[in-house]
Image (cartoon, rainbow, N blue to C red; front, side):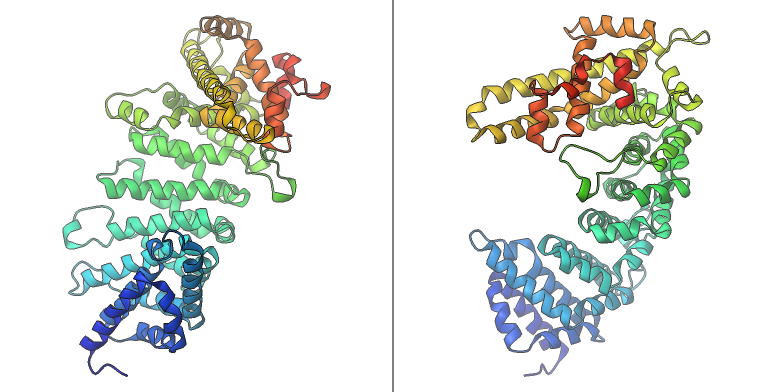
Length: 507
């Protein structure tokens, strides 16, 4: 039966929305041979009909359509099969073509409907990521979505009620979809990490905030998604090289130099990912280890130091600033952990007999030219060390008090280690690393010991924690890592007996 008018066709498609209440009926739709017809409507000259089809697929792929309690797996398979059949009929190709014909221009009479169409298309992509990763990747490739997204995140096409805003709502959503895709689809992420063009676009989006702060919630979310995308890419070995080659390190220093505090804190997040070595490949992976630092990370560290970034990194560590800056520090407590991690990597990624390494140490040690400013820097690291140690100790006490909830010894050891990590064990070990490097100076060492004693800690505890960190990096499981912490080190792993000066080369 063919609809005699577009109004009847629109009504017929709308009635199909009821299938979202019982996705098992989708099989009947397939058996009736309706899928080629639905895909064919994607090329209808009336854009409203096309958008009706997209809305239908959005509703059918929404999580609440296939995740009803007790029937989740079967309903999910049904929806996956339905979308795969649509894909076999070139639905995703048509989706990409339709996306490019939509006109979001504010002055267009059809602008609002087309903006809604873009929103629905992006919602469909997000639904597919939750539904089935392979289908999502298939959709992105068939629709050539990355090309469109790369263009859309750079261009604002504000609706009439958004006039004057720097970022429109669909532009923000496009940036969010980029972030979601890069985090969820490894093969796509690797390809984008090797793409100079895409990384360059993200850096240009970030560079807008050298001298401006987001003016509303939409723009703030947009900036956070751009930063998240960059973090995912610079966590990849090839992404680090592309990032460095496009002068991304120097851009981070410029952002940290400005008084736009949002940009400063978000750029610190990118620096943290850029300096940290990536996880080891699966063939070499342990649950606790990381890959050894590469030449690229060492280059990034040196370039950051040469660009005078240390001054701004220490300013962030010390929470310099008033009013809005202090509110941001309270809103983002992870800033302390990121700053300490960056400092620890700057110390480890620079050769000990080089000017770059000495410049990092100079921020924490006295000199003839500076006999005072190093003290608050040292005190701040010790303060954080004590705070992280207290959090880890409290987590240990809570876990040991609830030990009866653990089903078995292996599970108990793994859960205990995870509880310590959640409480801040990694950040504690990063402050330990910084203390190990700067304690080589007698004046600094004396000050560190004095500050630690006030809270019942000592450099011996720092040595123990460093020993656990080094031994755990080679542990084959979280259980083994926790066993090492609780006294299970072999003679070869008794790193805690070493002096700090002997521990440093192992870091």
